[in-house]
Amino acid sequence: MKAYSIDLQQKTTETCENERISHRQLAQRFWVTPSFTVKRLKQYRGIGEIVSKTSSRQPRELNEAQMQTVQAPS
Image 1 (cartoon, rainbow, N blue to C red):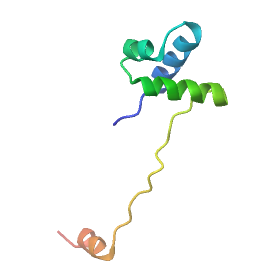
Image 2: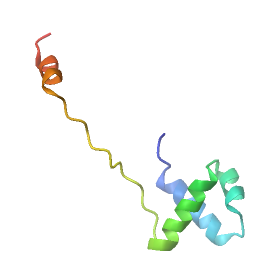
Image 3: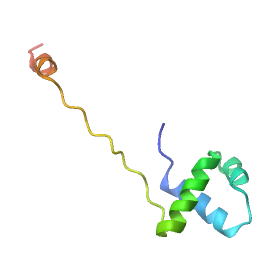
Image 4: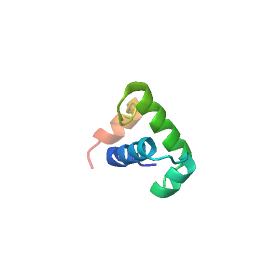
């Protein structure tokens, strides 16, 4: 699944902070999940800013057989 843009994250957070609106209503308005709105608001209130998540997944390394296949002439 593709990550939500920083702009969308900021808009949802600002709307929730400025309007008396439930997380479900906010999610319906911006076409996101309620858990997204809860997590972003919690993050914003905790550290004071919206930070995009980065992938923590490390690239896989090829084993010896795979390296030979890749390096073999076509």
